[in-house]
Length: 116
Image (cartoon, rainbow, N blue to C red; front, side, top):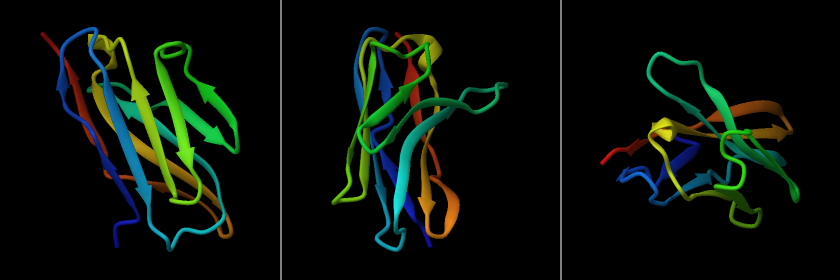
């Protein structure tokens, strides 16, 4: 059963923008945190941004360029990515942490390619 569905990954030129969306299944309850991680080829998965309530957290490399938002009523989280650079290219994974039961959920990933 697919519990997190991501969309929005695409090929974009440097300096361009993309908006990623993540929809969590209604079977996931008591979501505390939603967020995005990314993994580039040959690198470890790294945090991009998370949102807990109204509190946000960003990797230093994306501060000022990326914005995470969440619609708690719809169980969705979006990541607006502006001023994209080649080093932002990666597979982006949606992440959810629920309180009851306490566990992590991961999406299947969506590819973001930044190239001219």
